[in-house]
Amino acid sequence: MSDKTISEISPDAAEAAESVLVDTSRPNLGIWALAWPAIFTNLLFSVIGIVSIKIVGALGADAVAAVTTGHRLFFGLQAVLMAISAGTTALVARAWGARNFEEGARVTSVSLWIGNVVALVLMVPCLFFGYEIASVFGLSEEPTRLAGEFIQYLSVFNIAFSVNMVLGAALRAAGDTRTPLWIGVITNIINVIGVYLLVHGLYGFPAMGVSGAAVANGVAFGVGALIFLYLYYGGKILVKPGGPGSLSEGRVRQLVHIGYPAGIEQFVFQAGFVAFLWLVAFYGTAPYAAYGVGVQILSISFVVGFGFSIAGATLVGQHLGANDSEGAVASGWKALWLAISSMVLLSIVIVFFANEIARYLIDDDEVVRLTVIFIYIMALVQPLMAVEFTLGGCLRGAGDTRYPLMATMIGLIGVRVGLAALFVFAGLSVEWIYAALIGDYIIKAILLLRRFHSGKWQQIFTDAETRFAGYQK
Image (cartoon, rainbow, N blue to C red; front, side):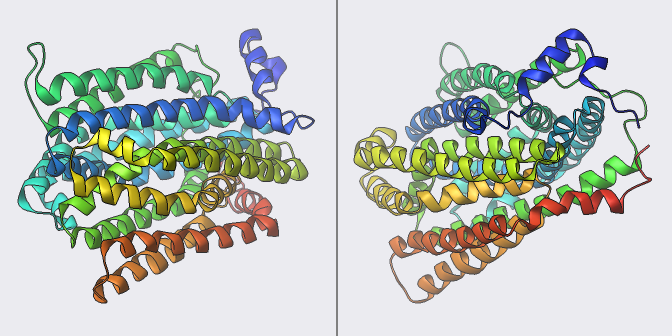
């Protein structure tokens, strides 16, 4: 396996590569430089999501419940793709930290082809069994039917979703968070325009209702994918297509070794959410819709955590690739404290205007009341969510994907769903079901803090390399 250094690649690529390599003397600057484009991208996505909920909300609580369900199920079925992107992030960040840019390119090529095949396979159950899949939430007939149609339409764009996820992950792992930013801006603008036109059928477009929101999402993914592919195969972005021999047994094994726990974690994560929302659905459509609206509003705070998660994963992976364990540890802790302070400040603002925002999104007194309560509860756990997002991302960036899986299983399935089921059995109000989230985030924060503090995650990737030595040609 060749090991290209900066001097061996093109001058333009060399300059770009040097600009994103970790600067161990200025960790705060490195974290912010990587985090702000990701935060801005996801913030825009959240704002567009809020606008979309506003547009769909005019159709009533059933429509909001259907979109909430459809998005949840769609991302649940994409768990394997999320696992592939987790492996891509860890391996590309390592290669970049070691200045082995050719290896990063080859990993990306393998990830992209595997992701596209998986996307095609996942399309089949969504197209033919959308209603049956949506029915697991236990909603009434109308929102279940609408959610099933939402899944069917969105699944047509599975490959586009895969391209966006894999190439976006590879670029962020290499340190380029700005290209996904401007592509995300274009994608989200197309999304909101499409929702506006297709949900209510304006300017000659068909009135598709909830299905129109799915088509708008899918078309936006499609445009984003085309832009990514044009830049990727045109050699216009930092990570280039891998050359002949990219598809080696060693790379596939490493992607699987790192990725499959992340895939299982996503499956557990989505299954836990299905179970939790199923319990919420016992109380009717209003509490269910309130959950969806509340999450969308608070996503303005969540995206900050996701941004620092991406920055943490990238810097930890690159520092470890450069054999700088101290830099990896320092980057993780700094990313965490920046995430905590930012998320807490944002959540305070959201709490202050919770009623006004909820009332703007949906004109239903009961949904608004429950949404405000949900926001108050979630605001309490913002520091804990910052731990999950940031340190979970740092561990995955180091290749330690098994421990976040364990934390998710214990916190989400054992605590959140367990407490919620207990509260339902005891006949308590739905506010108690929402409050079960607090226990979940407390447990996950404790587990992830202990793991990161232990430093054991620093050896995970080295052990895997030893195990697969000789397979990567």
